[in-house]
View 1 (cartoon, helix red, strand yellow):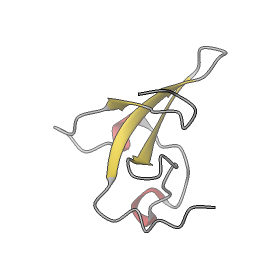
View 2 (cartoon, helix red, strand yellow):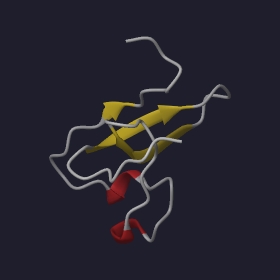
View 3 (cartoon, rainbow, N blue to C red):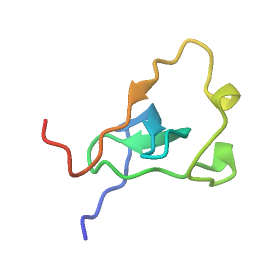
Length: 67
């Protein structure tokens, strides 16, 4: 298991699951894990309106995807 502090490596992402549902989360771009933050009550997925205005929303990177 990789050890990562997620500091300075987070971004808001949009994740589309196989069944077509869309979820928003904060993803660590260093280890690719979903990050739970206090400001979102430590939930893995957040509502769209919880993303600060002006923030770019990236496509979720699956750990199994080739870059």
